[in-house]
Image 1 (cartoon, rainbow, N blue to C red):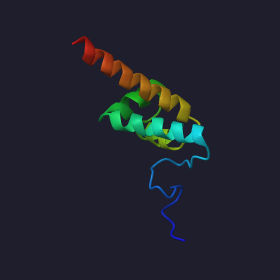
Image 2 (cartoon, rainbow, N blue to C red; image 1 turned 180 degrees about the vertical axis):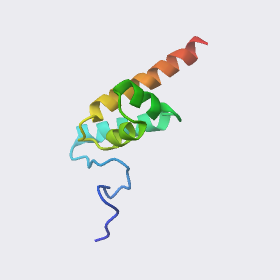
Image 3 (cartoon, rainbow, N blue to C red; image 1 turned 60 degrees about the vertical axis):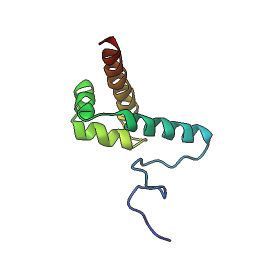
Image 4 (cartoon, rainbow, N blue to C red; image 1 turned 135 degrees about the vertical axis):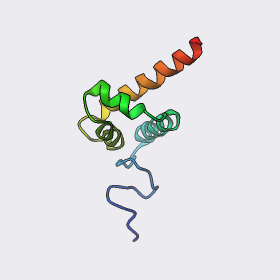
Length: 90
């Protein structure tokens, strides 16, 4: 059995999370979609929103069971939504 790396599931995902049911798969898909639309500098904004470092914000996002994970997901969604609203207003 080949070990991919510490905390990484077999699908080479950066998320420290292995989906066990359909709800988990949908959540993982949501996280992957957020990563696709995230832009450079978003982790800095998330860190400022949560009063943590940008690296801590990024790591907490990828560690699904971490203390700040839910807040990081909400914050990155907020940053992305705000940016898309500003772009649409222009």
